[in-house]
Image 1 (cartoon, rainbow, N blue to C red):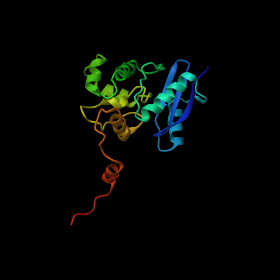
Image 2: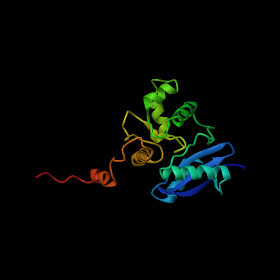
Image 3: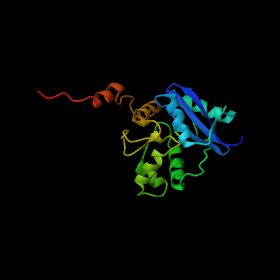
Image 4: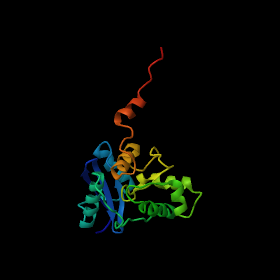
Length: 192
């Protein structure tokens, strides 16, 4: 193939991006509020990547991402990731996260134990925040504590995390609506 490439593609949640190279997927960027922002974030992660048409293999990954964002079950365990340049600890965390089944979650403490560093809760959290492989490494399934879906998840935020977990059946579909989120940001009225 010769070098890194990327493409932007449509999903039900907006225009997402994927970058790949000779050794596998380099990054997945979930949809931002505008396509230009999605593109910029992907290019920051992979500055040498050039826009290109996806190979058959990458087209299959794109189809899987689009399916997952529709709520359809999809397995990414066969997707090869290019882990070059990533810290070894982060790679172990990503492997542990990839092992979390759809519809289930794991806490940072559980993940730290799985990677052989029981006291490394903060390091696990940092690895999750730096996850360049959204959905393929389903960091939305990694929670700071049991049931706490409010923590930072790479590349999508709290609302996206809750939406993905609800679609997978890991949490009740309830959660805060956009109205709830906006209401908490509104200025308080003076008391009478």
